Image 1 (cartoon, rainbow, N blue to C red):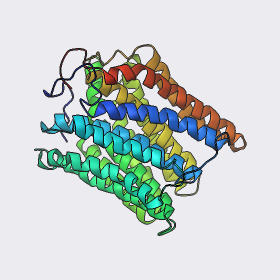
Image 2: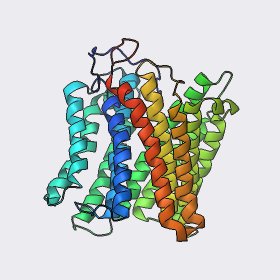
Image 3: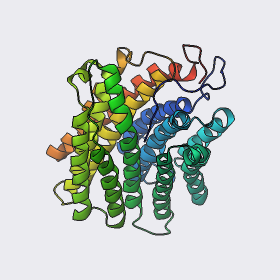
Image 4: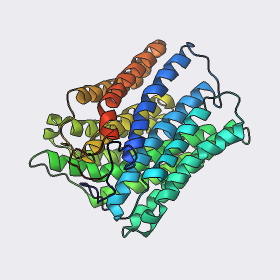
Length: 399
């Protein structure tokens, strides 16, 4: 897949307020704020400080909102920006972008509002991902690179995952909730594998003098063949040894892939090492999830290695890098606060995974520490990037 990174094509110029000038702006801001609010509320609910209520149970809400709220917002923001570069065709801006943002926000509010009709909550929440897919289907389908059509299938997979969750919650069919959650995890992984495989080696070569990433065609093909196979097996026969074996194979392929991108110079550039460490968390999480398929460790530990470590760290780095590049700023100038945020989130992932794995009796302590570190990391992101995301580009270009 050909992925262009650089200045966005010419778009309509904006005034002083540019939040809806391009897709990354509202959805990266929404993702940052939601990551901050959702974890803060989760810790308060977990400890009984705030009474639980609304559409989901406590655990269901936490899992659903981190995937279909936070992760979906990051993916929407990235694709609503990148598809313009990939295809040269129009993407939603202005009023259409406002509408998509409002649907996302309305769903987040409705799932925590007690007393609302359950079918209405499900309908609104289910609408967001198909609407994003609908808004992008023309450039993805008619663009020159046919591989981009894969994202339409991923949108369909995400919608199916959300539907399985809601069918379970609505009582239509029990036992579907965990399948929907893990299918969404796999769809998010597919997006991250697809995007990271293009941007991480590109960013590395651009930022580190003399760096040459090794991209092997067989590894690129195996990446998606093995991940799709693992996702299908996990959907049909969840948490079994066959899925575990396939996930271990995915982890091995990704370890080879990441090793080919590595250069010692990344540790001098925070915006690079956060991407590499985030991808390393994905590799570890896939391996742990594979081992969990053989009942060698709890699935929750493996899941959080993927979500907190892989998805959390990698998306924080991607949002930071994309926001700098698409607002005309120096892509390596993260300022003093964001490298600290990157380190805190990595530490939080280590606590969330390693704590319960080795000292389960201190489980509540690990939850509180990891949650607090996550909150601090995304608080830094919101403080640093809110003015960047709502104001026009510093170089005067549109977008």
